[in-house]
Length: 304
Image (tube, rainbow, N blue to C red; front, side):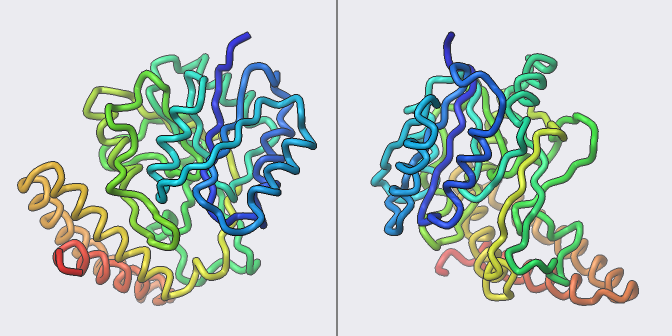
């Protein structure tokens, strides 16, 4: 029986969680001959490699492929995972995202029910290491912690919405030429993003359908440092910088359009700030303004 599903996990210095991430997949009662795990180590300097070896020894019957990608950066690692994999369905999970026990069965069922899916994403629930939900977290900042919840019904990602990298997938035949844009994406502690938005926009441009599968669920660990004001600033800078590079790489018109949209987003941000202030949760509005400020700064200025 051929491999149907390839689970691609790219990792960098995640010794604390990588074994648990892999173990959650191994715990799925899904035929081992129908899926594989491709682990791409992107130059980790901790004990990630030994944790992967421990997993291999614990689950020798699984199709587990461990590779090292020396070109630094998440896009390089994801592209290596695509090339090393064999399945028609490519699933990308973060190295600290824990799939539910029937993840693979549900995915297989969804793919059977929606054969026209070019790509897909599922629900991502944040698990805060501190045990406390940050007071600034709200509907409009949910994605900052790589969380996603579009409800209980299957639906399409329309317009400017798209899956989040902690729990997403693409059919091999729908992967665009060039795969993930290596000019974008995180690189060690650099929070540059945009590679997911870029590839899903190209899939949509090719008339590919991107589905939200609500029962395709993972829990995603959020370290305490990712809830700090400093981290949010770095994240916003990365968003602004990546959007500038992405749109300038398309055309001058695309970049000017992104500047116009940024102005629209400022208007919406200020309205939300007023709403949160009136509602008694000003910290949510204040963080939205803080985030938007740094996105704009790095979107507008190419010298930063």
